[in-house]
Length: 434
Image (cartoon, rainbow, N blue to C red):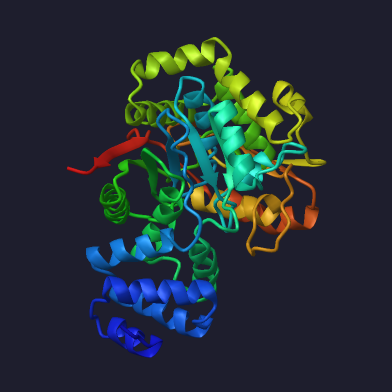
């Protein structure tokens, strides 16, 4: 059957459902360069406005998935389970989580991304370690995975190329916040990894992509359904992102905090979320023992050794894991202090993430360079009692002009009141296919 882009754009514009054949034709033509960006942009806006049915979303994800290479990891017998986070501030969980669960037998082909906007990227953080490379050709990807039970890598040129093109287009056409386009983008890349199971960390709150619980639930249910349709058992945890995770924001800072977790230290919320997601990954892999097994892997040092071994295998200098004090630092530091005494009732993730980005810890544009030493260390979070003049945060920066422009904004991230706030749940809900 022959199609034209115009008729399919018109159909979606008017709220009609596109057939699987029509969707397959669109993705094939766009990947091949036969469908111009302006027509795909028009279609993306129509999808943004009109949404997609379940059948359309399934067909769209399948077409994206098969737009390039699909990894065949059947030669690795053990269960292959990955984790994806929808992004947040201070969210370094993948870095301690992957080696932790790999050290107890879960095979983790972790495909991660870079930061853009106020959310940090796992690849950027890992590349703070000198020599560490996340650009792995498929054969090298399989070699590291086979030898070590895990790998940290970025999306290859041949893996879901339709998503690479479409994401850049969506970013330039204000169509990024589309639930079907978000979910198909995430799931097509994950399904292309040849997984047996997938855990999703779907954030909700001020620092998350989805600000409200209802939107986060809908995104989680949508991705879980896509996974089930493709035969990959998928479990989502909805987790809070009103305040940053942990005490460190910034690339080198977050590597140091990740190492702390694998040493049996680290902030309680980062440890708890790492353990909660790790338990689900073990469940999906069919490995018994739960949290006690994960705690043993940390206590014995095998989880930290796994990270050290993978860093070395991917070209990184393992001495930076052994001594995180070697990681990049900035030349200047400033302190944000509490204007009054009382209880911290807000430590706004979005504000802190935006300030960190503007100081150089992240990218506002794809071509921006990251300063790995820039970071914010939190000294007070929600529920903490502070006195007037007590530090709320310590800021590491290299450019004074940038800090001068951001210091008032950062100070506004905290609210202090007389009454202690109610405790906030970190893990809010678990969602899986019925």
